[in-house]
Image (tube, rainbow, N blue to C red; front, side, top):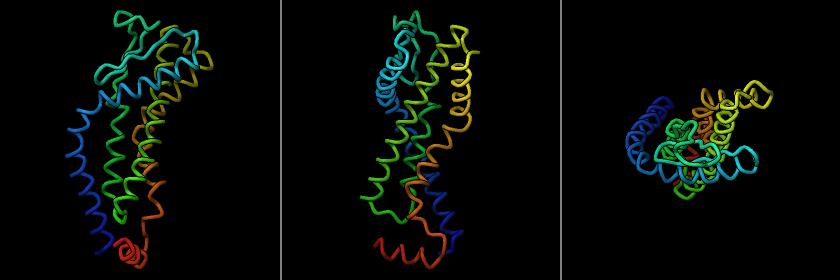
Length: 190
């Protein structure tokens, strides 16, 4: 099989898996959202003892509450579909990757999801802290400017880039760039 054919098969697998996994993700997002919000809340509390903000998950949003007083004090919500959608891409990339046995695929997928989970927590904390500073009109001080740049990076590049980088980093040694190596790798995986 030529390299172009293999690439076409890989891309086709990705597209089919995206269509199949996306509806499942909509069902599991609120559960994942609650978990990320709980962990993120711990980090917000550790880093901003006097800030008085709390994160409250609700379906596909995380509300940033001032003083944790409830919905009437909610400053802004984070649409987590934008933050977490890259988890679908990461899962699809691992499922579509050739030359991985089931055990290795699951092990690498678990490691990738764990790494991406950390980026999700960091993203939620950065967005929450920036939102809080913006509400206090402190987004022009040095901390606010740093958080704004981090927020911009996460929104414009990080959400799409992280799963691809994680996948590439974890699977690079299983990809073959020469035809002879690829044939040897396929023989060894069977």
